[in-house]
Length: 221
Image (cartoon, rainbow, N blue to C red; front, side, top):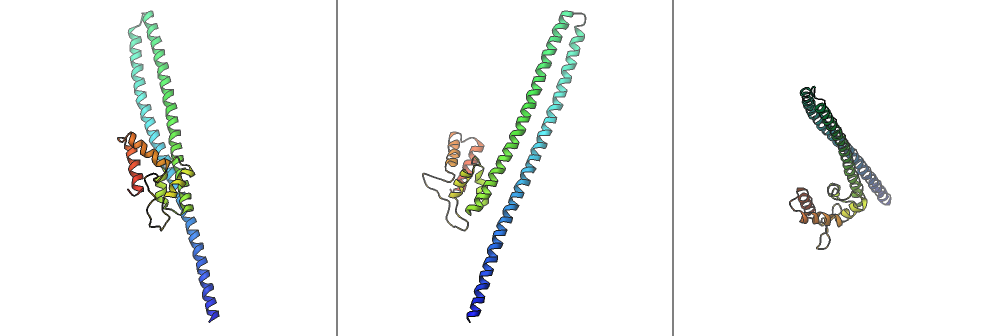
């Protein structure tokens, strides 16, 4: 009887150990898959924005080309009408040089702004990706709902401290308790206060309203 019991105990321990290893492996694989998907989504978004940006730039360049041609035709006509009048020709040429300089400056400014927009788009995507990565890592470590934390993390500055503060307000997985909410402190701490204050200051702003309603929904209100 004792031998049978010992065998059963050993079998139970082996099964438990195997189960724990499988769970750990599954969690790591799931997290790795989530990371791969996030990277893929980020690259796809960069590609989409790049394509959209390039299309817009081409449209602007095409329109500018038509404008430049119209100006050139106008200038040629002015020069033709002023033939024989050196004083008028000189004034027209001076005006054309000034207009060309202004056009070149506008083009340079536009190119600079386009590059600035591209960098900003890349930084925004990189920042969002970092937020999601931090949220996934923290959700796994603190055993809270990953999707919910990722969703809420976009309202933070992306730092691990801010996201950990959010995670501390979320219930553990399997916990039936609702989010911690009271009159003095609600989910998100300072981040929630920032969203709330922005909404109070300008309730007609669509983005402020969406953030405010989403965080209230996350609080279970």
